[in-house]
Amino acid sequence: MTALVSMQGIEKRFPGVHALKQASFELEAGEVHALMGENGAGKSTLMKILSGVYSKDAGSMTLMGNEVSFDGPRSAQDAGICIIHQELSLMNDLTVAQNIFIGREPRLSFGRLNDTALNNQAQEIFKQMNLSINPRTVVSSLTIAKQQMVEIAKALSYRSKILVMDEPTAALNDAEIADLFVIIEKLKKEGVGIIYISHKMDELNRIADRVTVMRDGETIDTALVATTSTDDIISMMVGRELIRESVQIPELSNAPIVLEVENLCRGKQIRNVSFDLRQGEILGFAGLMGAGRTEVARAIFGADKIDSGTIKVHGKTVNIKSPSDAVELGIGYLSEDRKHFGIATGMDVRANIAMASMKRFTSKLGVLNESAMRDVANEYIEKLDIRTPSDRQELRFLSGGNQQKVVIGKWLLRNSEVLIFDEPTRGIDVGAKAEIYKLLNQLAELGRSIIVISSELPEVIRLSHRIAVMCEGRLTGILPGGTSSQKDIMSLATDRSDQSHSPEPTGKMSNG
Image (cartoon, rainbow, N blue to C red):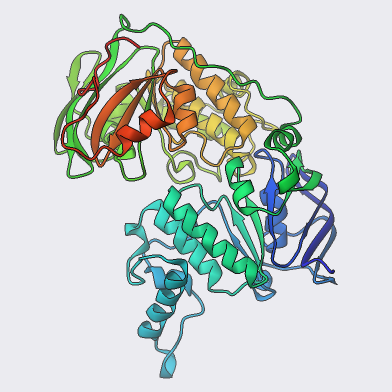
């Protein structure tokens, strides 16, 4: 049987990076083929060549046995290939329906837009997906999860033969993931070939038929998911054994309180939230999507205005009206959407690390001290083990894990005492995750105070000294790290009663 897609001996180079080295990949019709590997392994680059975003330097690519070469994404779409990128590419000021059919809108006479047909066609796709999204809704008003589903709907609208999904569940909750998997099974039965890129190991057994593992730009192996263990896949991905360290909970009951939040309120998103954070502590925030975790972080950082409540830094009440106020007080925030709010992908590593501390490198006449920026950038490249050819490499060429390290370097240079990490390992592979975990623990040992917001319960349990759990805008309890289970967390994450059942309803630390 002729493969739906066959890629052999694919080569691709970028400035200073040999991204693909004789890479190969095959996809059958009606198959879900998982593509795994650490960030920087070459997965996304290979798929961008398949979908016409990049051109290959060498190698061959065939569709149903016929050799092809695309001069852009549109020609790949015309050939039946559609990719759902990890980074959302929607136009925020247009409606959902307009985004789905951009450039393909149904028209009336004299070229007028047929809004009724446009919205009806979008609604039909949502019906197939079991989604309740109004096609007339402006995209900017949707959550990241809903925007992800719109991206998937847009891909389905092309009736593609080959669908590439790059981390499609990164921003979805369990119910939305289940709906997506139903859609995938339906597409399989219709003969669509699906290439599924994900770092979530548990999804493989649920959805994939085969798995291909890449490492350092090369294809390591292709195997049947049913007969391949998770440990075998991880071993192929990282080429080394991962050390799984147990949580070490330090004694912090006498450590000074660095940050104190009392009765914080913002509409229904944040309702009387109170907690404290001690020097050298990692405080995890858990909860279901929409629980209010990110909203609390943004309120503390001054990104969103609060209705009422008190924030204290080192015991002193502060008035944080903007992120610049928070930065001056020693608070750094690493957003869950680092591409939009954490880094400038078109700028180099040097500029990104210096970004929050530009006054330090600028003369009174506004001239940048490039040599000082270079020295500092290289210092943090070495400290954080940022894998880059040089400090002049553009961030868009770095892996997700290394981009995250650059953001951390930016806030360390700013000498932030409190670091808020919102989904610090989203879209990062298992090897890079272990490095981020190690780095966060080192920062805590050096006396930095850290808040970690994560939707992955094993991550919260592994990292946190204490775990604050939220439900529908309320802090429903604080659990000790190390000994709490996922069941304990979920019990509080679904506690919709008006009064918390936690022994620490105010979120204050008693001990550990």
